[in-house]
Image (cartoon, rainbow over all chains, first blue to last red; front, side):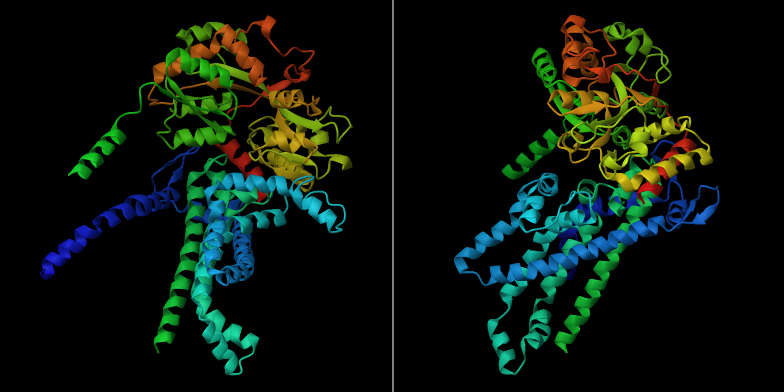
Length: 296
Length: 337
């Protein structure tokens, strides 16, 4: 095959991928970006325009006294979303390492079953699973009974609290962390741990110098898989958190719905996407520099 | 070759228009009697697909996004007005339908559809709040119980996730006119809701039956007929009659512009409005019927359903100007920020 034919083949061979990416990914994002620059319609909807006021609105709004004032309320929502996303990621990581370790060290014929159990929740609709937590955390629910059994004092309710919301988020996204961490731990050669001990590395040193660097790709992949959907979450704050504190997901929903301000909703969505992209870039750079180190 | 043929057929199927005998309805969740849907399917041979919404805003947003695929939607009066003004509805000459003859005179020629071109009323009622009498035994004769709750209700009240009727109720309580464009008045509404917030357990429009019926909360913002149905099912609820008044609503059948099956949609509206079927619908939905029903078969009367026969003034929600709507949104986002 000569060079030209190869090039043509490459072009047409990849064309379906480009087409799919363009139609399902790039064009929709372009539309959202376009809406965020549009003029809002009086009752929702929008007109195409080049209007940056939706982005300005994230920082400055009309106050109750008719003055344009700096208003940190949307920044607070963005900050809260990031904080909950990070907390979810951290808790998922802390919980999934031991789980993944147990699965990786289980008897060979048990492993497929255990991995299957981890993925089992995905077969049930997310909404149903979050509703189940309403029952578990609700009045006279499992959580309250267990709490009392353990000698805890009288509780009003576990529902509609930040803790309930965080519980729901950790529950929803933890399988996304367990699987890559499991894959990383599974590949860890026990001989390397032995070697570390032979070289007088204590447990801490072994963890820090051997286990963490070798499982890092799994941990970071899991962290991204959890963090990205966690900052876009809508269900858990609404159902388990009681909708008392807005997150970016609920803010976007409100703006497209009751707020009837689509450009502003789209602008917040673009900010959310920018945050995700920043996280992905940071991770890619990290992976690249780690790769260089390994090569050197 | 076979594969190409198969793919070709599959694509043809996808490209074919929706089946002529399918009716897609977007309605308030569980608001139409299932037995009537079955009966309509049996009578016409059509397939009815139902999709539920929990707020007028959701319905409006979906229609605005275009190509919703629905043949019938059932928004409330102020949203009917907005949808007509925004050109989102099909002119179905509602006044020429037989169903129009069944409509109570008081709902004809109203401000949201003055020429009766677009809508046939489906149900009407009020929005207020209900209390669980197992948990709260105090008075419920004023919105003050809800907005400035006594100690026994603090932390035990729930609101809706959308501002629409909640802000309306707060306005009734404060004596602020609906859709006020006056910032100082709306600031009062905001202050009231903000002072109430520490006592609110949840802002949620889903799953209200459960939350209030099971006693998760003791008071909930809600609609008359839903309280009635849950009370009938055995929950010890009471629908409050606040002296400041209740927020009124009337839902109508409308047909979105460009609906695939306008004729079938009209047929369904006619079907739902016959005296026999409207009675079945009334007995199921438990909200007041704006069309003629068979009183002798009606399940709910002023004696057993005080919810449906308010003893206090009822003020219907209006279609706010964009400026007024912005203030409502500001109240809500500032409240939940």
